[in-house]
Image 1 (cartoon, rainbow, N blue to C red):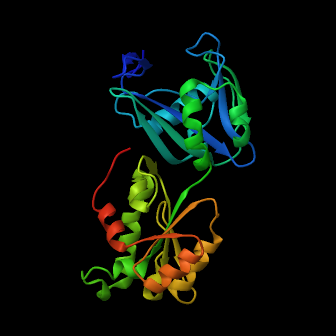
Image 2: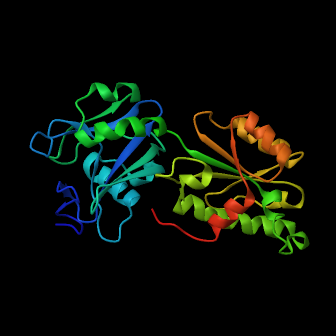
Image 3: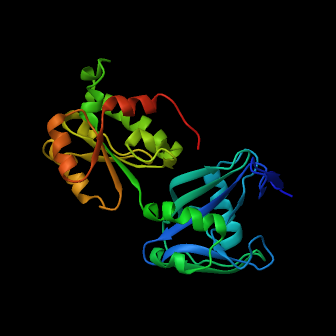
Length: 287
């Protein structure tokens, strides 16, 4: 048995698998839908449809567990999975985390063990037509609106850097580069939805797009953070970036500029101030 394997009882007296809780992967392919697992008849609530998943091992995060289980049960390569969000349900002494992800490239699913009778890509609007595992049937209406979505955070670098009197004016490019580097932590570690005006029970691994102008235009991208060098003024580049984003994504612009706020809100984006972002960069949360 692997670490984390074993049954526990929650506060309601129900029996659950996973001494550290469990996690499942809701993987979306834009062309095919979401990947469902037809559970073997001998499993708990057998012959129903749900997600690849299983027990969280010791020292393993829910996203790591969900991606590992999808590889073990459905042959999904970990490097083909881009984690975007997660939602956790606490049963009191046991929890289940649904990890949402998109496929980085076309993947070929494959039944890897006896726990699965079949794997199938299903259009989101057709999921409820299948006989679903009980807990998944309850969770699906809450999960469906976010399948395939991403949190996109567009950062007004000049406004955020200029919000603190820390000597940034002596080296504008250096200050923007430091902001870029610190933003990488949000992409890697994730953020609670409540920080970006989203549902509080959700965590997101955002796509971060840093818009720079003036002297800061010479900095390049680093790691997971995209850098957009404004050809004219930064505000226009931010508005264009919002317009170029997918309408289905959660779009959040970080700025304290009132005029810019009005412009991006007219394009469907939400806005948070620099203090919110800088507060997040000052500490880490593990999901």
